[in-house]
Image 1 (spheres, rainbow, N blue to C red):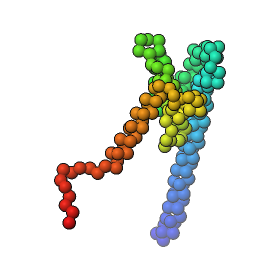
Image 2 (cartoon, helix red, strand yellow; image 1 turned 30 degrees about the horizontal axis):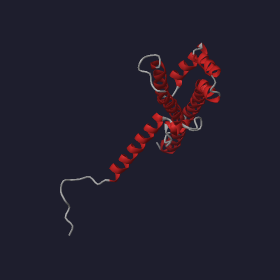
Image 3 (cartoon, rainbow, N blue to C red; image 1 turned 180 degrees about the vertical axis):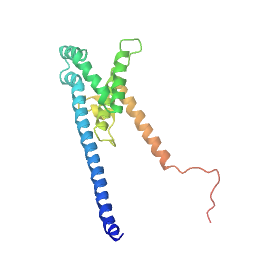
Image 4 (cartoon, one colour; image 1 turned 90 degrees about the horizontal axis):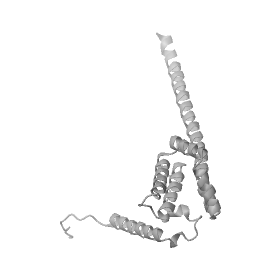
Length: 188
């Protein structure tokens, strides 16, 4: 019995070390998998945005036709499929919304070009968040500012900016106001 009391702390220590090693190896494997997935997502995001990058680099009609041809290609569709499979949820939703707007352009209820630009800004913002910058304070308009020098002069953007400013002011006012209880406090 005495030998068991001497051996028990050693066994408990070995068991604790084994459990610690197992948990550490699982966490490291999970971190490596997350890093690999983030790297794959980043590559897909850059590749899927390439036609848009080309359009903003050269606004000529021939460049737009090349980009349209690229978007209709089988390779691009495969890339979009990969995006749907491994992309961050918010990125996939923003991407689907952007393409839904583009598909509506063929019908009577076509969105404005500004709405499409802001949709692209939403995609860029979702990518930014999906790659790890969750608490960004940038807006979809901010994500486009480097590409479109006169973005603040576009009609739909002005309206959105005014609505955002009004919403922010209302939120600030609400957070600073004191709730009304219906009774007046007495000051003595």
